[in-house]
Image 1 (cartoon, rainbow, N blue to C red):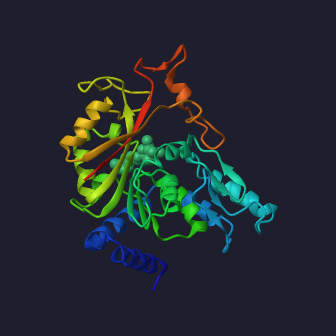
Image 2 (image 1 turned 45 degrees about the vertical axis):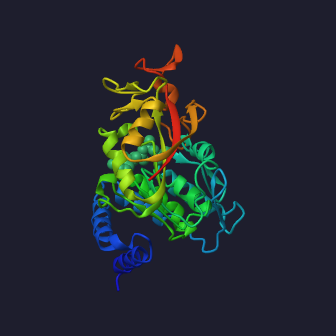
Image 3 (image 1 turned 60 degrees about the vertical axis):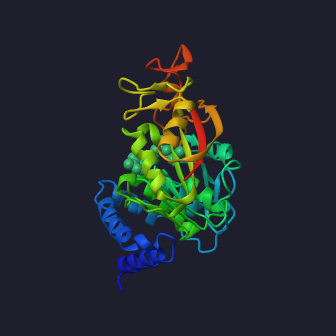
Length: 329
Ligand SMILES: C[S@@+](CC[C@H](N)C(=O)[O-])C[C@H]1O[C@@H](n2cnc3c(N)ncnc32)[C@H](O)[C@@H]1O
């Protein structure tokens, strides 16, 4: 059996032994095509070389429930040359937007303090112990590892950005936990009416959807009866009739469509079939949480805000304010 056949077989086995089993054949086909498409990305060979450069360490201890995903320790078996090799491989996967990670003492200070988002929601959601979880738009997979660290039985992260798949593979190279999967697909590629997941996370996605109600309806369909949605999105201050649609960019972001008030968002959720809607958190995003670093050297939040009035974006809209809500099917 070739290496590809062995990987294919293990994915198929994984699917058949999960609560996604009723959709195993369909998902397997989608994934096979997605992996083939990923390999056609112009940077794929360069990223593959970077992954191949990662030094091997068969027995490393990993910490999935600390603010930085911890992979091994600085004083594990690597010599200086291997530490340099590791650093160079991880640098080939720039920009790191979601993290932090700590690979054997190499601290990846990503653009986002994704641990802050996790801290805001972790105590308010239903315990993840033994749950099958979907993380839509998972980026590098940072939150997928935190979900597993919180006891989830199986975690599927989906994201169509191939660089993030490679960053996930860098972590998986050492963590080697098959319960956490990264599928390089967009949410629209998932089969309809899966009704398979105990918890579905949609974080940083809703405002990028041209049709937010269709997204909420799809989230509803992905959940098992009684399952929990964890929704994190940009909102604005206002009453139940308030919603911002930027005329073009918002905080320099393309593809930003609807920023509702919390009360309007609750109506959207109710009309999409959700019950028991709870607001866990409302927090303004600051340049302490989202900023340029050595590991993400492009512009970041401080470049997206009005230099004379940071309560406004550069376009004059209210600066980013984010809410986390839970709701049940
Ligand atoms: C704002 S980031 C949010 C990342 C992460 N969920 C978080 O909250 O930190 C949005 C992510 O959605 C991904 N994305 C873009 N289009 C998508 C799609 N159609 N389906 C799923 N994810 C998508 C992007 O690649 C990006 O990683």
